[in-house]
Length: 275
Image 1: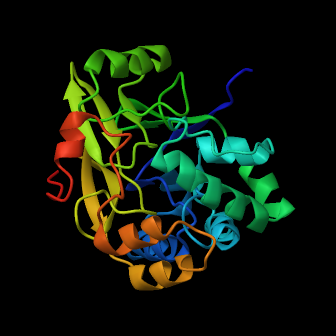
Image 2 (image 1 turned 120 degrees about the horizontal axis):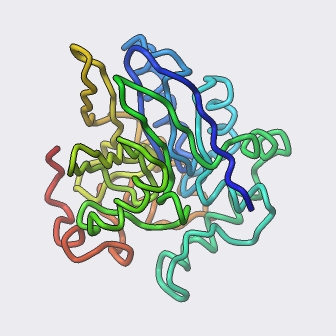
């Protein structure tokens, strides 16, 4: 199937980048407030996908994103939901804890979403491209070739290079892995803003996003923590239908397991993130 790639032109002013809302309405409300406080217009707010996920308010989250008019690409979850599939498409190892948890949260989310929400998710492209400070930026979920590919900072640069070359980009903005990071090489940048729906396994309930800014004709980027009403999110998730372990992570900032993580990232659990 051909990819749907949407070019949104040249962006000016600050650009807000985020991903992995995961049905966390409270985090999305807080991020929208940040954008408004910083004067970042909705068309400059871009999500790397996975709007729907582990938390308790999938329908409300989708509708708020629609109302906000921020942009998003398809995450693997959106693809699976819009195609009526029975699983999240995360490529978790069969029988793993993540696989078992997905058999709870994905059917829950699927049961809560209206046709209006599904139809809206179906309008998202696979990738977004734009120009910023004389650089070509491409937004992917996993990577250009596989929406469910887990790309981390420790992932070999040659793997990242494939996506950079295939898209002829200076900057790749990616999601899916759940951890904020950046890596620069040969005047190219791989930037993961992090996710706002779940903590980054760093021992705090805060979540992550990033901002692009043009300074004297050059692109600058910064990662930021987001505070939000995580206690309410935790309470709403304790509904008997969602994994208790994910509800606990919302508060502790520690993932239940590190099955998807390479050794380097797994060893950093609970140590905080420095960017």
